[in-house]
Amino acid sequence: MSRRDDGAITLHVVIMVIALMAAFGLVVDVGTATAAKGRAIHNAYAAARAGAEALSSPTFVTTGRIAVDPVAARQAALAYLQRAGDAEGATVTVSGSTVTVHVRQVEHPHILSAFGLNTITVSGEGSASAVYGLQGNTP
Image (cartoon, helix red, strand yellow):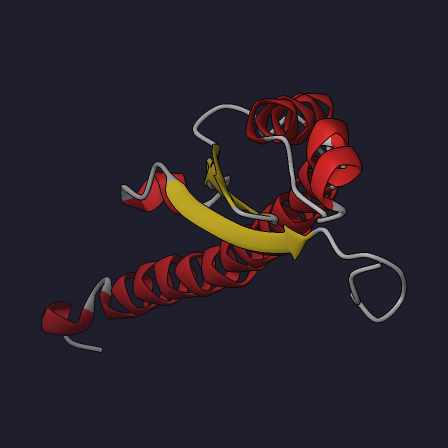
């Protein structure tokens, strides 16, 4: 063996170990981010449903229409997100009888942080509408 080949195997092993760690990090951390996105979407829809249940009684009594109380809807949606741990950075929009919630989560990678990726931001959005009865028909 010539002197020029000394350490060639070590270099290949080091490169392969780094490549395998990066691939493992992608699998673990991207999987974690995908699960976090699913949680964000779920929490957004659940918070929107909670907000859509905040009906305006005076509107229904006087007009017979289903309407969402915007202030109570925001409070109900944010209260749900607070319990779920997603209230920070969340937005709640009420338009007529529809409540839309946007949730943003920041995940901190476990393995890819060694390669300089320190945060992964995911978001989810969900909407719910208040309806009357099973078909949504007005009385």
